[in-house]
Image (cartoon, rainbow, N blue to C red; front, side, top):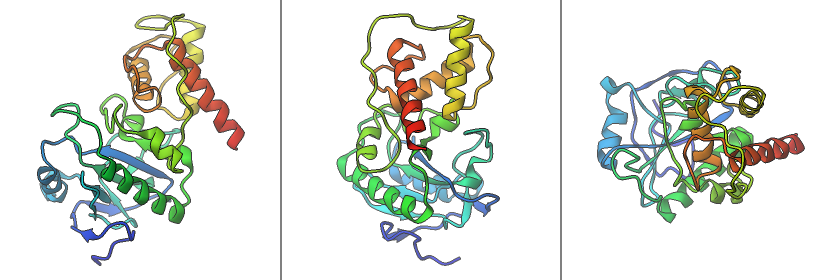
Length: 251
C-alpha cells in the first residue's frame, strides 16, 4: 500500500491494517473525537489489528495531521449507524479522528491549532470529493444511541463559517411547550418526521420514547449545544425548522 497521503494537509502517514473495499461513493465526511486518555494511546488502538477500528485521518491537538487509511478504502470508524436511510456509513464516508479525551476522560475545548487543521483538511476533502455541506456530520449524528462525539464543545459554527458543514444560528432558549418522556400525539409525530427528514435514523412512533430522546440529544450536541438535555423545547424545535428551511432554500 502506498504511503503517500491523499491530502496535502496530512504531512505524515501511519498505516492502519484495518480497512476493506468500499461499496459506495464517498458522500459523507464523519468527524469523531478519539475519546481516550492520550493521543498516543488512541493512535496505537487505531493501528491495532485486534481492535478492528481505524480512520482515514488523525488530527493532534497541536494541529498535526496523520493519514492512516487511503481514502479509496473503507476505514472502520463509524460502526453501526444510519443517515438518510443509508446504513453502511463506513462505505460512503471519510472518517477523521480528532484528539480529545471525550466525555469519559475529561472532555475539553478543542485548541485553535487543532480546529484550524480540521478546517483545512475538511476543505480539501470536500473540494476533491464534492461533499455537500449538510453531509459533514458528527459520529453522534449517525449513531445517536451509542455515541456522543465530537460533542457539544466542538465548534461547528466556526467550521460552517469557513465553509465546512451546515449550520443555522440556534434559536434562543425560551420557555414554552416542551416535549419529553412518554409524551405522545401529533406534536411528537411532527418532530419525529422533521428529524427523519433532516437525516436522523428514527421511527415515527408518535411517542417520545428513548430513541427520540437520544436523537434529540444528538441534534442538540451538534446544532443547539448551549443546553443538551434531550428535551424538545421551543429552541430545539425552532432550530430544527430553521435548518430544514435553509436546506430547502439551498436545493
